[in-house]
Image 1 (cartoon, helix red, strand yellow):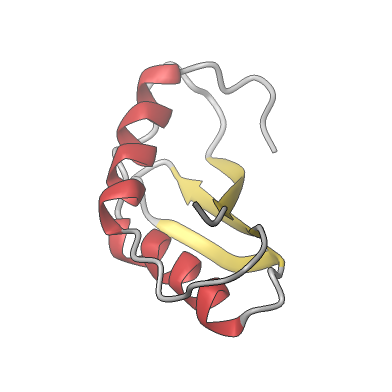
Image 2 (tube, helix red, strand yellow; image 1 turned 135 degrees about the horizontal axis):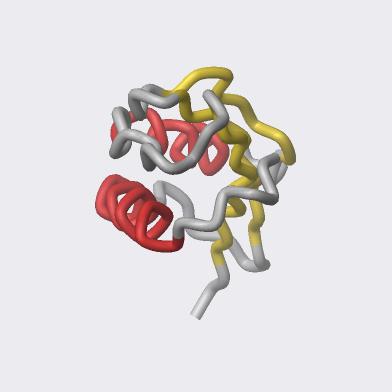
Length: 97
């Protein structure tokens, strides 16, 4: 939601944390995509966690939500960033091998 948030190191830390908490509970024939939306406040706390786009598979969608939930709190937002909150749309993608 914040085009002015240009701190790649923050995203690297946050997404690394999410990746370490991601557990895929499903096996599926085709590609699955679930988009999770959440906001992070200045302290790093997550608010407004929700499924923005469902994959159509409840177990997969719930696992995506849990990955973000378990990763909170995130690092505090950089002091140089003057806004109080950022919004993130995070796609989780599963492709069979």
